[in-house]
Image (tube, rainbow, N blue to C red; front, top):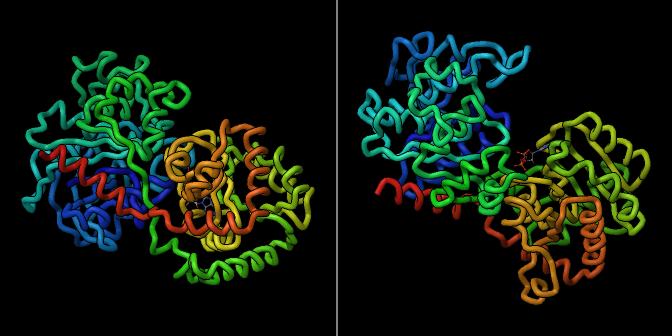
Length: 473
Ligand code: ADP
């Protein structure tokens, strides 16, 4: 099994993609899959590969020589594509000081080319995968090269983590990217007059996945598909949604060393964490204490928060926000803290350790996203008995069972799910939160339900294993 991506924890990360790519090999090892991960040898990774075995090489890899070096990092079998003309430079994986790298099409074409070549012919040590798993647009050309150059027995999977990034390139690059001209039509490579590495992968991969079942269905609709809805709808039969898992070594209230540990049986100790959190932010909150740990963007519905706060605070609620992002939203959050001293606390910044204290100390985590492919913070909330209050979209809809008379009676509710993701929807959800919180017995039951949810990687790893097995035949 060869996985190809532009990011992988613990080597290089800018977003959730890296967590998934880094978690899958260990999760799938338990299912009997030997997975190697191919990544670009960015400058920050190159030094660590000194002495690694060279298992593949090309004299001309889109403008210069390239080689693949194999080694082990933190239990992962890593393959680094060392092509200095493409990857050995200061800056981020996708952009430098002047914005996106202008040769991004060639950079990730090279990654896809090497991946397809390894899948077709194997590595110098005799290893050859039976499935090639590519991630997002940066891996999108791997299934395309595999298909167009002759796949043999090897099958391919493309996972969409974020449809918003599509790997666009001008049509004039078709030849330079070594793509077959006869495939430049709307049923294959052509995308609104140009090229898209993501579309190329979507039309050529044997199977497509995305990171939740609801998002898989949403992607076929114009509001979510961002231009690719038709392409995805045409391949609905090959599309599945598989939820991401949470790293339960890091996210478990019983063993978390950054908090006062507690479990579903010792929920009284959770109150100590709440008291510590209130003290840290100078708050005294009579009702439910909500938290937000998030990028501060419109996608996440953060702009809906200010409108909903006055009524929530009036009803006894409080809020602690940890996040960074859009400057206007950062200012709006600071404004709330100034307007509601003692009730709203805000920390602008990215702080992993503090995020644990928020999940331990909060009663509820607010995730009013307009779209959410999978989402992680609602799952942390479940594990910590910090009930998720989420918009009914994407992975949020798939992981939280909203409290209703029926789900409460059945004893299965784990949070509050609302729709639509707008000001009124959120306001009603917060009113519901205050009401449920006041009913201490029901609340405790919801917490215990939430904490029992299996949000680790086991179920997802099994789903990926079934998919790979079906493909490898
Ligand atoms: P997305 O990838 O769209 O930002 P996810 O919910 O999938 O949303 O993942 C976000 C991750 O980043 C979570 O692990 C969350 O806890 C973390 N995170 C976001 N903002 C912060 C912050 N300001 N401080 C610490 N962790 C954060």
